[in-house]
Length: 341
Image (cartoon, rainbow, N blue to C red; front, side, top):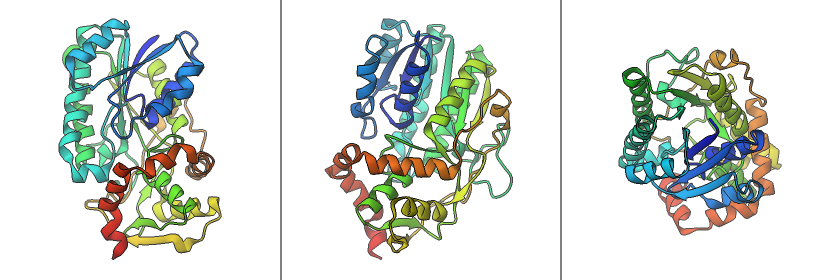
């Protein structure tokens, strides 16, 4: 596994993974294959292109395009696919579910076909804790029944099942990781922590869905990258591994922590109408991954604080996004009515 094709590598988690892997493994070559939708940005990889010239290259392409995927795999002699490419935002999946099905299900099929056709050493699927549905008590294990409750979660569940089907049907060498809510550098500011951090920096309201008592495991993105790396090198084929801190905090606690980190008043908090089918709690049992020797380096609170500080120190990265027409249109559609009520 020395020549990796990282699909979705210009996105949030993908770009962090590319930077991490190239820095750790001096004999690794990485092809980033990314469609460059609104959340995939070349700016996320500028330092990578400079620091790892000769071991990194970029191809713009859609994972749903079988000919383009096959060409990239052959041209760059790829031996491993790590698939981060996905439509990922639950709120957007409620607005336009069709694109989620296309990318997260059909796109996964295309990549699996390429892995099978060219006899790759590994196909690794990046999944999410949302496939388990809301977990009101206890913790989700890798063997639990899948009960997705949003179009996003359903599309990721379908992708996971396709991956496992290729293992069972053709013994394609696959692994899956299901991560909790990632936070950290380069996360598009539609997601809650960067959204709240950047709003707070500008003294704008922080729109908290419902009572804010939904519980999430906020995981620092580089901890997640280390977990994926561990599974690639030590994980058993055909297996799934949960990745998270193993703890949770309520959304209102997270919101207050964002404000405290920035020295902003809690009067910026505004409770708004909840979103449809909002899962009350996610919680992962991460003992299977810990048994491989992995451990999260950050707690939920440390992950949130570190992320908020990054956004405070890197306004040059997010201000062009939030001042753009595309972002403003989304924000108005998602929060305009809620905030006005």
